Length: 310
Image 1: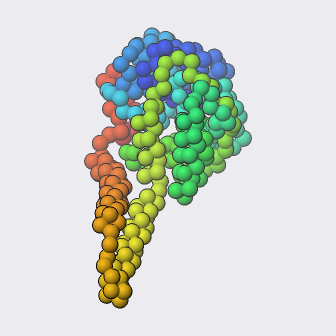
Image 2 (image 1 turned 45 degrees about the vertical axis):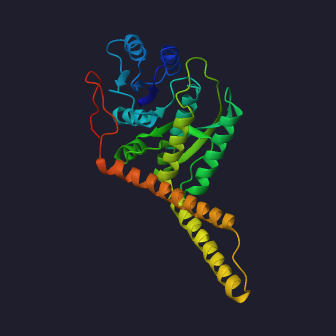
Image 3 (image 1 turned 60 degrees about the vertical axis):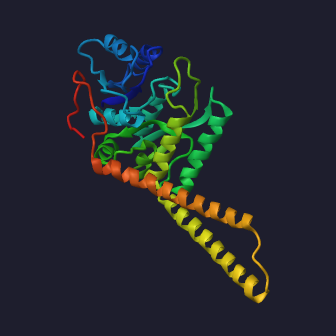
């Protein structure tokens, strides 16, 4: 049995060697390969990893020609993984590598996906904890896919699941939603996420918002339906206001007061229209990206090529 472990790396020179040594120590009794995916690092991450991996080792460094993003890095690792089981874990050691052994035990029991479910998140501020909790619960509300709450990308998957994921053609990838979507037998393991001990987070607010947008747009058309219903409600209110104006003018022999209220109504309807157009634009933009069929990532010339190109 071969275990593949995918570790994305972006400017992690302060911790990459510790990550490599920790994984080697944890997996010393398991036949394995470590696939470090260098997501266009501009520091010495790639050089340090290449220097640490001995010649003839099954471990490899897969290097992108530029930064293509966290989800693309995981996808590149899945393309090149040869294992009967494949684990994915961030390279900052916040997710405990020791948990991979527990995931393997669950896999041997017959589970085809074993994901890590965060019980506590050390070192994270109140704002991030609240927004993360709100996002996962909103995603479950918006979509028909049973996406586990408080679950990141840290998981172990059977080869059957990996092959199905590799066959999916979409560009805007949200792995936390794709894995539950494909089905199979899945279970979770609770754990406490550690505080980052070196380097900086690679997921600032801007990237978090983009990931959230990808998750909602990829697995739900509810925002489009909400735009329709908001438009219908606004149109209904406008119709009632028009009826009231006519009745007030002719039946009650009064004047229609309120230029202020008229201005508010115009601004409200204009806002509804712009929001609706914006939501539609998000979906159209994703269709545009899919139609272009650009590769999900580009490898450096000196990086090992996958057996099957995307």
